[in-house]
Image (cartoon, rainbow, N blue to C red):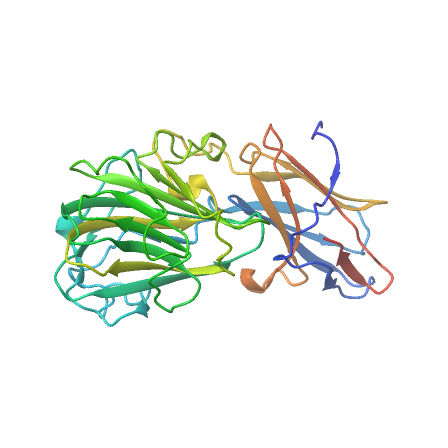
Length: 371
């Protein structure tokens, strides 16, 4: 089978685990080992061997997740103050106590702008009492990491001043100068800023009446980090065809975030806004799902698993074209997925295939992943 050129596992960045040792039972005993390809696609491979280096006895592949989304919020709750009992209190744990300034209401349910999967209710920002609520997601950091966030927005009454209505933050502490802030002004212009209290870039035209899709991205990079914003982007659902951003700023400032781990909804000025469908993810497709892109007809799968002089070879197909993935491994197939070790990182090729070789040491009865 032609699986493309053979590649060794790509080293992980600073934010990933490396040099992970996986303890195995003595070679005289039957052992179980699992590897998982995780990314925008997750696969689980299980196999049993009678010895450490033996012929593959059996394996199975299970598709477990289609995306690397960090947060998806449809606000599928009863009407009431966001964060109140049973009204998103398990998700919107940060920020201020629940208040009428930020309420879940079915009237504010938004859809359209080409975005698929809308449901539930929405959030109404209103009144002269200024409050904020925050939801956590898995902390992200490291050069090359991108954190995307999208939401639907409809302005009912324009703000009386310029304030951020949504922002990304490291931790649960509110900020007037967040790492990434989405601003609105009294003329309904949309703004974007990095670690500033007023936008560093603003749309030339005011938002027209109706529902708008807003997508933002924070890029951790070797130089000063960058933030981007897209207003009603023309291309959705495909990480390979990201349109040019509407606004870009941040690279002139060294005030970068050490990490990002919370999204804040911020009612900080007199206004009436409807906001819905908040998504946080690691790539464009995570936060811009669309019915224009049909789902994969088959799940990514392993096609070959065998030992070679260079190490354990894992091959497979049916992945997203040029999509990224991680290799996770565990000595015990029954432990929680969160406890599996991340041992390699790579990308599917132009045909959706992968070919990884992971070095194995048998001197101490361990698998050693030099990732």
